[in-house]
Amino acid sequence: MGPKRKKVKRRRYDSSIRTEAAERTRRRILDAARDMFVTTGYAGFTMQEIAVRAQVALDTVYASVGRKPQLVRLLVETAISSTHQAVPPEQRAYVQRIHAAATAREKLATYAKAVVEIQCRLAPIVRALEGAAAAEPELAKIWHEISERRARNMKLFAAELVKAGGLRPGLTVDRIADVIWAMNGPELYTLLVSQRGWSATELEIWLADAWARLLLGSS
Image 1: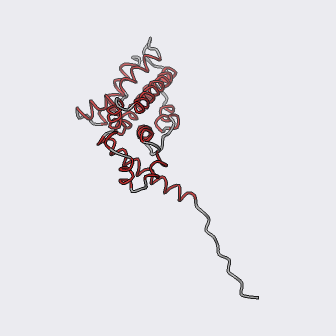
Image 2: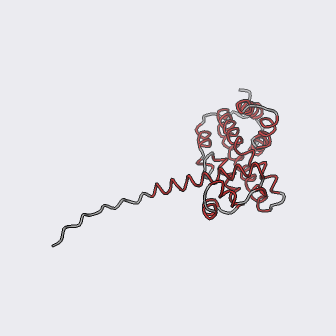
Image 3: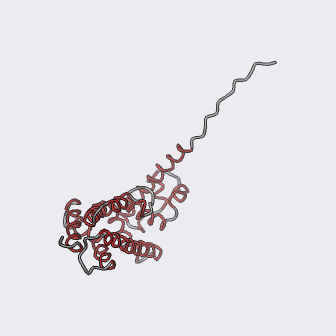
């Protein structure tokens, strides 16, 4: 009999390594796309240019983030979610903090902080999106869907405030939702922070105070 062969231990395939590598690649793609979209506009870059900047193959870009309109939607969703993944509203950290807040005043202050943090990332993307939507029907549809979703979410938030109590008499859920909706968008952030030089902290404090004065009772 010949010598016994040594058994070679095969390394277990660690799928987490591949997943982490794919996530790092996706982040590079999104970071490159965000920079180019904000600085050059929708028509000012190609998917190939994103691939070059992210140092990946073009096929990898499409596999990770989809077509160009889908990429823009993803830029908006990740800016709102504060991650490199689109997170459903109920799973977002700030939404959970709002639910945990005991009073309407605390909920409004928590949301004011979240709005400013979100708009720091989102407002430049929205400005680029609005500029492109007039010429790109698919982008116009994306922006309309996101805007309508924001309005619906404000109704849910308004209902939560009503349930918490302490609001001014006579305010309906719709009126509360409209007031918050009108002040939580990228337009106000752009006016006060980008154009008038307010700090993020100043805007956060002002929003919380303004909402409290408009919506809460005197007690």
